[in-house]
Image (cartoon, helix red, strand yellow):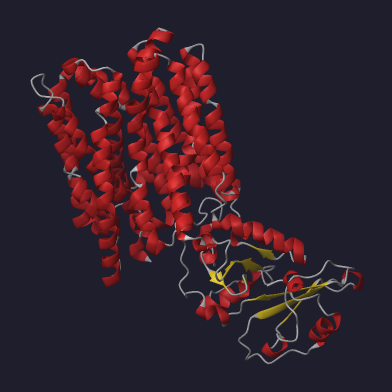
Length: 615
């Protein structure tokens, strides 16, 4: 609490502050907040900051609040801070870091107050020494010189600037907006699938080259997060959303007007890089505003967005193709969708707590002149070499050394790749069997959306089951796999149905119905496995998720390049059945890890040291 709050009750009385300053040291049994008194004695050669512990009876005497405009260099700045005693009722002894801890830009191994960004204290200022005393952290004096007067900024109790304290309605609005953003980004990647024939005609290229316009944007999804994730930790969600989505919207213009296929492919790749901020930051934005107890329900509804979004591409743009025969109109529609989401998402206030507190600390330093007020992220700012290691090297290291992560990523790759394979298998199946145009083929994707909607009914039930589990015992990452165990059989079932019904004598409902089972299983698997990765690699969840995004996008980009040829060479039945048998073999992964996952994580690589089990 700073002296800047005093203006609400009247100006500071110089006689009172003088009395406070001259008071002898009080007894040490006071449990009220510490009162820090600052005075500029530079002209007298005295150190700038003088800190005194004031007994509780003086709190009524000293007016605490916003200070008036300083009249001279001897103006006072008063504010209260927490002590080890007051932290007893406000923090836990065990320091815990939330999933949105700035792992990339803070030296997390040295963090002494990792819960700074989720904690609320009465005064909003916690001296480092109070934290060390409260948590009994041993220190090495020669390594800790200059840290004695550091004070960390936290949210105050009931702080309206804390995103966790925003109204439930506003939280759901933000959840809806970022979910729509993910749909818009995914829509942009698949929108060209409704007009591949137009690309072939306009640029006189083969089908394989036209498919590249879809694949390269998915490749951009793999590259972009390497930059957007650490930048958002440093500058916040809002400026990254604003810059990246603005560029994504703008780069749809050269896509629409490109005079050659090379320009179109390059611009589509850049669109993927810029749009990927929506994919990598949306989940973080939801985690920013929902406490752990309620976060699962929000994530459960959000889970379908990355997988339902691509389905809207051929569904919408197939009819644009049929109705106008204009390739540029597809990109104008995508630009309008991206532009609308740019406006709505950019209007959302900053949600990332470390950045909000960093701005507050800067404001307090300016108001009080105390340069020891900061966030732990500022004190333990990671050097560029460490950021590069965390963002670029660690995900690759995890891929190369963590069999648990590799197997789960392989499953995610399969599901994501199959989704994009459907975009190129359906045109072959429904054109050859029924002679459907791009518009009617797009309608065949509706069952996938229906299946995903059924999954969204199931995921809140799974979340309630998980909540009951953790109320009875300590949870394990394997508790998250129940959803994937339910959804896993539906994927091979869908592909077996697709192959078995791909005959002319079978009505279109047969192959189209395969989408119901696939959409249901797809969302449940993604929701479950994603949570499993987070819980298994909690201490480096950001790097594990980055590895997942990179490998998933690589698979999604590769499958479209050979799906059409595979269906032509193997036939409509065996192409689907080949994928079905591969999916059937992968079903063992969630069941096997549910039974033996804890043991496998303990013996394979370094999994155990990243897991909840060792906390």
